[in-house]
Image 1 (cartoon, rainbow, N blue to C red):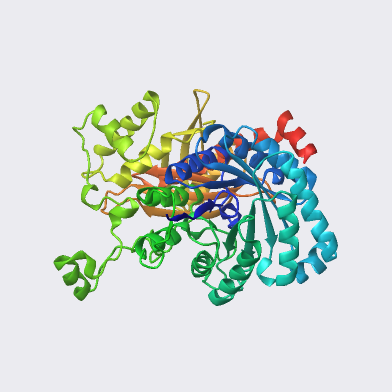
Image 2 (tube, one colour):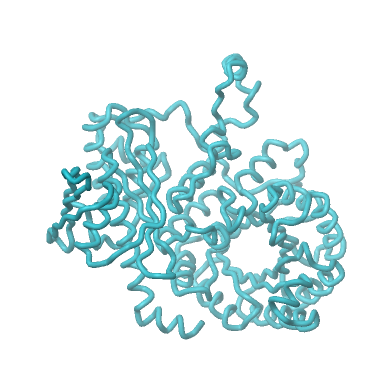
Length: 519
């Protein structure tokens, strides 16, 4: 009988720590639902004590998931553990993941605690967490630079305190595969079946996936990873790479299996990219834009004769239906559109379907060919339930005789149209200034990306912006979609503004204030 390797996804927690990858509550819930559809065993939904936004996101995620375990990170502190327990209270399956650093450098310079004090804090935190939930995970931060004897001491102590999963993070991505193999084997031999051994590898030296695989070979039965390898610094182990290696190299890993539905990998990767605005590099394994592209004449010849000559993974295995990318048209009906939406993984109510169908019809008048990726973008706009305080009505951009650009914009708020204009050094500059004048809220553009959704001159333009509305606060992401790039730019900036207003209401609310005081 094959052993199950549990997939612990931390895209919503560690992945969000990537610079610029912050997500709002609505986006986190949407991604959590997709991760459950992917088959992830444990979803680390956030760090409940870090902010009211994280607390609320974990609480909302706990309400909607029915299969995946919802986990919150917590420092080895009672207030963190209590916040984690409260945030996950509504989950069908829940876990508290508490941690403390164990390496000499961390204990001396960061914690300023003796090894004995660290063991005591670890034991006390696990004991307290165990009074609140049944499933407790304990992590030794910077474990791979810790003394192996001390690791055995603290792990044995937290097992007795009630920890059921023990995580060994290579926090700074320092270790080589053979070193990880030796560490995990020694710890596994010591722990036996008293707890599940887990590994959490960072990619600072590009070895996160290789190290995770060595951990599996030597006793780890839980892998902590993220979609697209997202994460702070160089990122984490990429879920899609680990899963597809286990599947493709079944000759070496035939004793193991995972609960992942690989046909949802591409959709999940794309959703993470869309939400965060961070796209994998084109040559990224499994989900990169060029992962299944063949340009060399020799390769193309081999592919035409037999695909397996140069393709060890079929695109279909991860959910890319290459033979059905061209779909629907201006004469397609609502029923066919709804059926296609379902096949692409979208569950929308009648009102959302109607709105998306109207956008689809309008797009058909501007584009000759409608592709799956066009439809994904249109449908994706409808599943975003951020309160639309402002919405774009009309935009006109022109060049003045002075060489400056001028934008005249009309925006709708509460059914009322507001208009204004502004000069700028470029088209984007004057558009943003016009919106600032109308809304009365000034934003600082931190990042701006534009890309064609599909090929061709009539391709939809997708704009992703990151905007800072308050000094020293996280920049918020906005998305805009339109045939016209400037209209897409205005929509993206307004989207970021709406996200800011939505999050601002939470933070300044009575409930948010009480939460801040509690944590």
